[in-house]
Image: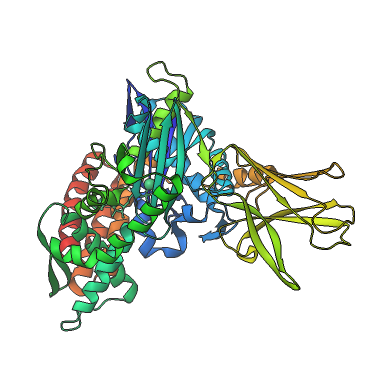
Length: 563
Ligand code: ADP
Ligand code: MG
């Protein structure tokens, strides 16, 4: 059985194709969304998901989130005593999802289709594959997130279609234009904002609340704890106002209560600057794909933040139609990955789809421009433009500047800047040239970029027949096979927090957080609850424990609202 995984920045999900539908698989806590957070508990045991997320605030040194942002780089994060690469942190999360799937299916799982953003670079894709490998999963295929959404909406059953996928998640915004033609799904363009998502909406509301608190001071708490508490309340308010016209933003502390009434209209005004930022990437994606909004057959809404009515309304007004939103926007990518997994396994109930990709960035070389005696070095000459459908092969002809020149050096870069100094250097090629008059020796530079993200650069001098080729595959951020083997051993040695303890650990983590956030009588009350619960835990009486949990959940909910 091949599973489908949405490895998200904020939340991750796992799904499987079952009885002709994509079935989402619940985690140890019975939830479909597993927060993309990993950490170590007080015994040095690995924790993943909700339990880890609860501890982000109370144990920042032993917990980490948002590591998807660093995929494809060598940046390491300290968790407890050891530093972890982003692909290792992703692997720990994948391992947990794999185990959830194995529990659910009752059989070992060794293969997966994992989704990645359409704009993910070669290094980021490789890192994702390594993460799968480190988690004991053979990555059958990486699928682009918008393509997965399209599969979930069954668009692959159409003859042909052009559509736009609008994905607003927790911290990122991605727009992709896709085209289905003769059974081929093509990402025509992708654009977005890597720093725009639900969290930015919450930050804005927190700032608004703090500004309003000038007249009446907010409860006293340590700055860190207060910010976390305000953010949690901001998220609650934002979600609530998707359903009701008004609510109250409330923070309490012991006897002291602070509150601010907030309406849907307030939010609409407050969020306007963020909503405005959604426009430019949409326009850019349409422009890059050379498609008019009116020619789109469908607009698909993806990402948890797309649940906001304000966002849906904006999308509807921008496109002059209602976007497709029959499916839960935060679940479609995992569903699509499961469908792709089923296709991979040649499941008879779905027709085969070939998926293609785009080059996520521009690839080019350094040139010098000259006008009379004046020369400007370090200019960028694009050869393969961003969003070109791969595989792609393009050629450019350049001419050596100096008559006495005996060798040309071709320096290869990736990036979108006019100046190579702002782009990423990938490698260089040197080719001998005969000393001739300017303009007499032409140098042909051909780039071929394939579906696996391999770039082949070839320099050809027609006059001499001289040829040089360079294949660029080793990205600076990618682990070598030896390093992978080494990390694999290290990860295998990590003790994992027992699965059946997760429900209890989540409650203890919530108590710890509440303790940190509160003061005075409330704090004492929280400490008592923790002591009592610890006591029941140690008695190991399953029935007593079940009852204690029910009572504790009620009290926690009351306290969290009241605190
Ligand atoms: P990602 O793809 O970035 O991992 P998701 O697609 O799961 O994440 O989106 C997470 C975001 O969705 C969070 O910021 C969360 O606040 C937001 N979200 C989830 N449900 C709702 C809702 N009902 N209303 C508004 N925002 C929501
Ligand atoms: Mg997502």
